[in-house]
Image (tube, rainbow, N blue to C red; front, side):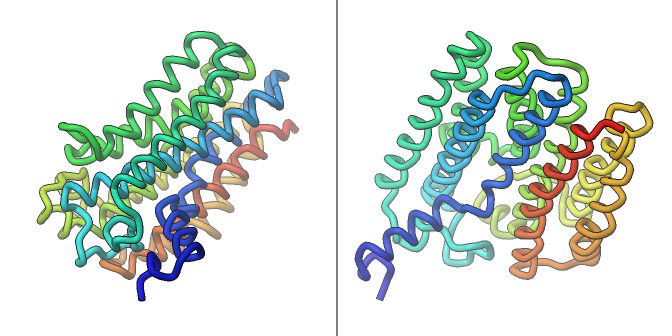
Length: 303
């Protein structure tokens, strides 16, 4: 008996599956870090910070709905899928339902955006519209960026740089060099999640004609790319301790690298593949959140 046949509880489970709660760390961490920089600079504004978090979560859910339905329609998600189940691929939700959910999620993001635009002006409007467009064209439209080896770049830019600096902007009314610096490791950790996902799916994506960066680089270099992103995520906080921008940065980098990053980095470099990468995917998502929290603490605490 399918979830569709079991009634209301099954449908709630299907929508939860499509929303992919585990990925919401990718939306939460940038807002936390951007807010930490605002606190550091004496510009913390609670309402804009909360609105930024709400908008980011809605954008992430909308993007997840879009990926679910568009990957299915393009034939990238089939019965051979190795990753966590997708609602459309399993027939739990129709493409029409997912597109309606996508529109609702983006609509809620725009509600938050209207308030943030009132606070921050036209730059917020531009950021919001660009973010929604990026979420849709990642797997949708006639030239989906995720199918042309640009997914990693767009993830780094929009879920890292734009999200952190945008959160800072709606509170401080400007951007600074350090808000950019603070955003770089966030972009790295969020991109790590995508890299593991695409590493796992190299064979099926290649077969479906989905040319992710992992497909272009191949398995060996994709694993090295993951390691490079982790190194960048740890190097920036360590460097900030040297410059005095975050005195505890080197401690944070050491703790995160040894206690959090080392186990799943060993798995990635050690050749773990296929469905065995799914736990690494979840660990990478958790790492993005923990990194954001630790990095934020290093930014705020001034010794």
